[in-house]
Image (cartoon, rainbow, N blue to C red; front, top):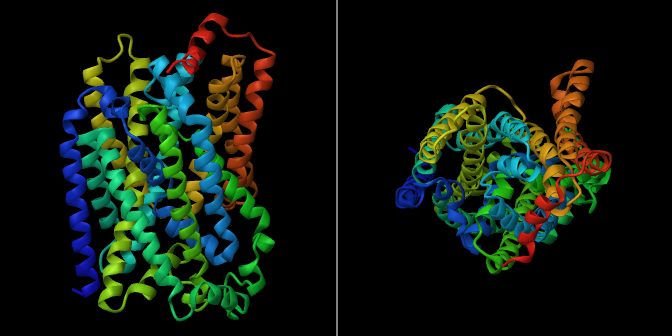
Length: 516
């Protein structure tokens, strides 16, 4: 076995042991439904902030987004990282964290589906939200598996990709089922530290590569870049160094909006605010999470922008999804120090993905065990049975995601963008207006949810029939942004023409904002 593989396996083994121990240690705190799903609403600033950041950035960001956009757009792709930090993180915390914590506590809502039910007095909306979550978060998590599979295949070419995806699925299932939200909070803190260290080391390594020549050399060499004659994605030095993305400006803007504003409607992101313990923790967490996202987001796209130089303008055999794995092997695959760094980077990408997976799995499992099944059963489900059911469904969802990931769907960026757009497009309008407006109605919230879903659904159908599904997948950022816009606009418009909610009940909900 090569030295690279030995170091990598050793690092992965240590990481796996830490994750399993975290799950076992957290078991005692996850026996109640509140403890399993939201940590008893007593999670501190650092764990919440790192949990938000590590859930935000998975291997798809590095292997998919940073690889594709860094290769095609160049330095302008760094704006995606900036947008994610400012719009997707800082603004999200400022707008939603405190209001989410207070209102969900007032309503005793543990999930976003429960929030919709109790905020709008609609069990049907709860069921619809649970179905959307369970269906559309499967491809989301599958994209994460595929991102990791591409990386491990580059390091262990003799092992099938599905083997690595299966190992990741098993590890996720073990510690998540054992420890619930508290286990994910502990591991998010560890994963966040690994991610920061790994990104800083990788930025230094890529900028120090002989073909890059530091930050100034990166700009100079990219400006002089000339595509090879047989390049399937030809570009120019002017494009790669354009501060606003050059000819990709429109594409860049849609991706910034999708990946930034999308967090405002994603249940696995908003769920972090349910668990944070107080206003002081929110203030500290806002700063910590924003700094974390700046380092990780901007670092990832900076690394991606070096890819054409380091790989000599030759797109790897595996296509755009193989850009970052191939870059890592080129930069870190030689010399003992480089091999050690590569092992750290592998754990970095695994950490990023595991955190996203655990958040998505917990969100999806609870959507069924807490929201869907009790709503369909006449006598509901006892709380102690819900905890067991949620644990079982975590395993079921992990299995479903793994099976979906093994299907040959080549472009992981489009896969994730599609899921992101559907889920956020459904929820962003009803959720935002539900927190900020006393006048929003049940009909308005329904219209926003269905409007977002139909925007993506109809667009996908039209594009697929006129061309094919790959064309629809390529348009997923535009569809996702459109769905979010429709959802945000439709809710207040329909609310203005439909029956107003009970004023006393709404006032009681909003009283929580004056309490502390």
